[in-house]
Amino acid sequence: MKPLVPMLLLIWSTQALAQTRMIPHITRGDGGFTTDIFLTNTSTTVKTLVLAGFDVDGQALAEHSASVEAGHVVDIDTSTIWGDDARLGYLTLSGAEEIRATASYRAVTSPASPAHTAESAEQATEWSLFAGDWSLVFDGVAVVNTGSASTQVHIERLDRDGTVRESATLPEALAPGAKALAVIGGPEVGLLQSPGEGLIRLRADQTLAVTALRGDLPGNRYLWTNPVTAMASRTTQSTTLALGSVPSGLPSAFDTFDKYVSVFGVHIFAVAGVPDAKALHAAHVMAEYLDNDEDGTIDDPAVLESMLARNAGLVMFAHRDDPAMDTFFDRVDSLDGWHLQDLQGDETLPNGAASGRFDATLEEVLHLINSAGHAEVYPEAFGISTESELAAAMDLARGGHFQQVPSSYPAGAWYTYDDVTCEYDCQLIEYLYWALTSLLGAQDFPGRLEEIQHEWRLNTADRLRAGDPAIYALLTDGRFVIPTILPDGDYRPAGGNGD
Image (cartoon, rainbow, N blue to C red; front, side):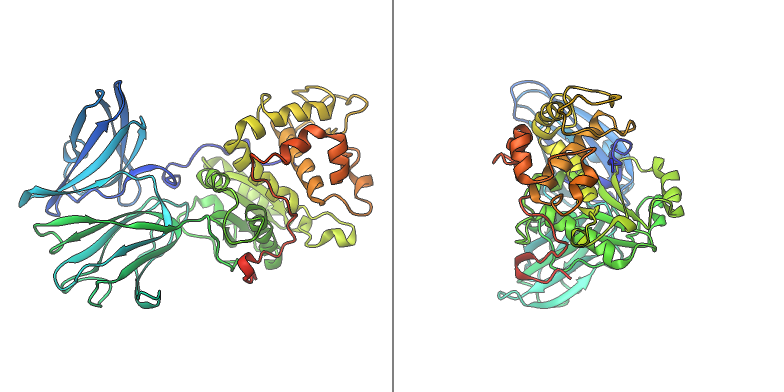
């Protein structure tokens, strides 16, 4: 089936903070501290940086464009641009990479001793920092949810052997793009009550941007920034893939769905009519494509980051005539920035080849990974354009370059997809699917060639190697991390149990 991607490519503003340059914390105007931003131009020419303000709920405030002369430093008082009404929570930065931003936090009562923290594009699902002596100082954090769904933020104190000795959770779930401030521990205040002076871990299901702060008392004279280390991101996956309810804070179109599972942060939504086992099968197949050696770590982090940045998701319906499908697609225009692919429950067939039936999960999940991942990360090789190596190979396979589906294909062509609604970009994704799944053995079972030969004739690895050397060479090129093992729907990372 052709992928459902061309209509949903814009980024949803408050849901696409992953890998964005940020200043995660701006002090509150009424909290006893002010924030200045210092911009340093490290280049030899004038450069411009755009600073976008967001409030603590993730709502966009004003943007400010700053031009900085070569080698110069510019000081921006945030209160002069965004006001001093405590609305500004954090900043995102876009534009010249040569301009580096640093936040300076100054106590109103002691302005000569500011704390400084540099911009960061680092976000992770797990962070660590070392606590101070909470009888003397407080430790706090500012956290921004840079993921695409709401998340709880858990805070733990660990012993040296990694044993969790005390834990707490922020009182409210953090919506996408929202920010929270929390005092972890300190004199008579804090979520944790122990004496401190240990390792503190922050955990969430979505990626977070974090600034750690230390002071003598919240709102008092002295404030420092505390080093904080990103420990894990969505490039690692729990051994458990479990269905849950659809996260809150998503566009209302997703109210159509009743079930949800996250695979390395990639969304899978399913309606009630899709059996749990089939939704989980799709999750296992996706995990196996992304972590093909099943060591618990993503094989190509760049592909995953591309998918996350585009809010890649699989949407599952019971069948093609499912009324829920019409309901969802009637509301799909509201989903700017979501890159979606559909899969039907009645075509999700675990171990289907054993009974002579093809499992469409192997196709539709791969479409999503190829279109939102490989095509974006490796545009010269797998790009959805007439200039890519993939396009050159496909033109050979179709017997010529056809922007539109021809009335008939030339004799000798081995890829002859004739759906007139599947234009050139769609044809590329279909061709990549046919070639890769044939290489992996998905199309090699009794009766399959007879079923598909009107569209594709090279259904085994040997036929592909001999009949289409261009695509075979591309898929086996060591420059790219391409799956080499066909998913079997049983993801068991690093010896764990994927059930």
